Length: 108
Image (tube, rainbow, N blue to C red; front, side):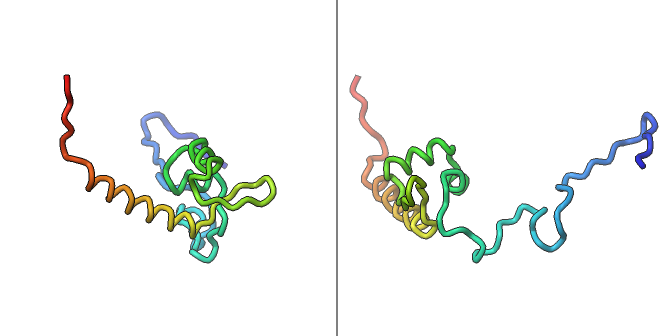
């Protein structure tokens, strides 16, 4: 039974998520252990890991800009291949940044 709060009494609000089972990490929002991570990721999972929209992730997957695995009509990305792709992109971007001049001349 809930009690009626008299006016003027402060409201105490918990900033933590309610529910879940203690010790499992379900309520804490922590990622599952590495063994429980899926091998193949869908567009939502890829988007979440890369910090981009689901539409952009799906577009990259459809254009084969990401390393995809096709199973029938399903398009997935291997989690290990995604890690390798991110490392390759990081190296490529660093090389491109080194080649670019610090200041570009603008003719007016």
